[in-house]
Image 1: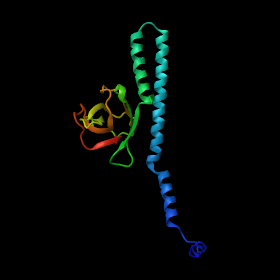
Image 2: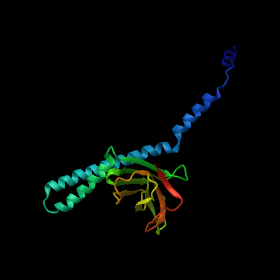
Image 3: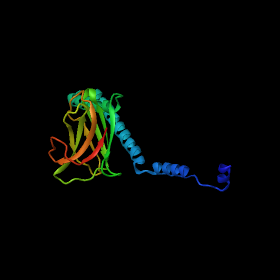
Amino acid sequence: MLGTNMLRAGAHFPAYSAMTEETRQTRNHPLTWLGWLLALVFAAVAAGLAHKVATARAELNNSQGGAAQTRVQLDHANQIVAVLSSPESAHVVLTETRHAMGPVGQVSWLASKGALVFIAGGLRPLPADKAYELWLIPAQSKAPIPAGLFRPDAAHGATVVLPPLPAETQAKSFEVTVEPGRGSETPSLPIVMQGQ
């Protein structure tokens, strides 16, 4: 009887309203579109690399001179494509730790070969004597491994491609810090981006 009277009186249901508002906020959350943007950048880079591999193969088949250099370029491009497309690769999205919006990056890590490709966007400019540094944090509680220095380009993007890293290293997480231009032996605080 009480339930019928509440329906007739047009009673409000706060739980339902809150759930609807929460759903609305989730759809409009600024990080939602960031994932789609990163996926588009990742797809564009993969397509570009696939084209580079096809072009290098064509050059290799059509020319005898400079074949050694073309083979090196082809091998390098094949390694990149393998890291990005291997089902064994881990793909880790890194986001800024201090702000809701900001830089975003993705690491593709093929542990069995020690091969890494990192793509980032939305990076803030740095002073001339500073650089961003990517770190691989091993799962075995070992010291962080430096995985490459980078500075943002004019479009606030950057890549780190196939830095020399030990194979068979199981990664617990990846981090990005701001370091002196020559790099550091250990990460400095604060951590700008991280992901696992």
